[in-house]
Image 1 (spheres, rainbow, N blue to C red):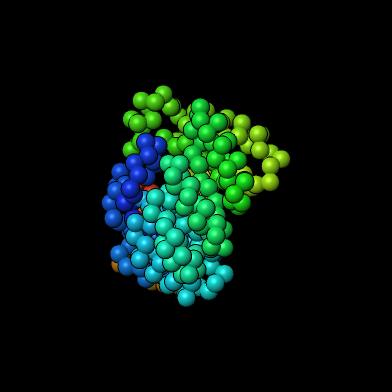
Image 2 (cartoon, rainbow, N blue to C red; image 1 turned 90 degrees about the vertical axis):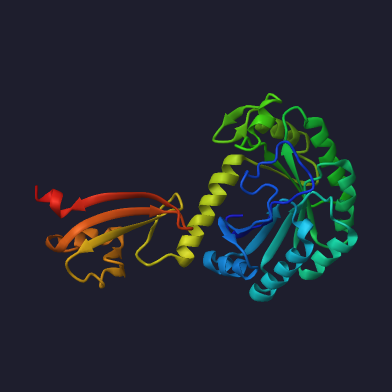
Length: 317
């Protein structure tokens, strides 16, 4: 997923899962985001895909099928712009996945659909999707104590010809904290991983280790840290300024220099200062420099730090 654009099409959903990790600012609200950037037009997704040099897109929410027309139009736009090899997958509970809706998605070019069947009756939507020739998978939360139910779903998926099942570590977030806490769930590791979720996944994986179905476990750390960091690095490498240095954490570093001389040969003018690469700072004529600031930002403009590393007034004291 680090090479794919994350399409958050809307936070609206017809189900209210107690463990839903969607943030308070997005849950139930009809806002759209391309990666971490809030957008208002479908064309904004094309711009963001170019910005990160994406190889595909993952459409999520909420339940995207609540806005089927919007999703179909977006898939069509992306395929027309980037070609048939641009891989698009979509997440849904299946509540709104009628045969007509699934057919529209397939015609638009959807490559893969991932179901989170929160109710047993939604499994009929999985069967409908399997008849359309697109890749079909299940996304299941690894809830401690529900290994038997999860195993039944994996077995059902195997028998039906579902291509893969992903077991996702249960995440404890600011919005679902009270709901999970009241059920006895606590953080076990990292920033959000619920204690016992990993062990529940391992027990299911062990049970099906020789089964003819692709079964994966995805930790909250991998999803929230590794995938996000990889996407940030990819975005900065594809669209960052020449003077921005990319860190291993997926942030950019640049030096902002106030000087009494023109430093355009080293970087770019920005207001009353010049922005240059941190690696060039030692080459600058210090006698002409007033201040040097080191700035660290995420690829979407959120400034993490701004540190004064040189001041002529302090140096002369």
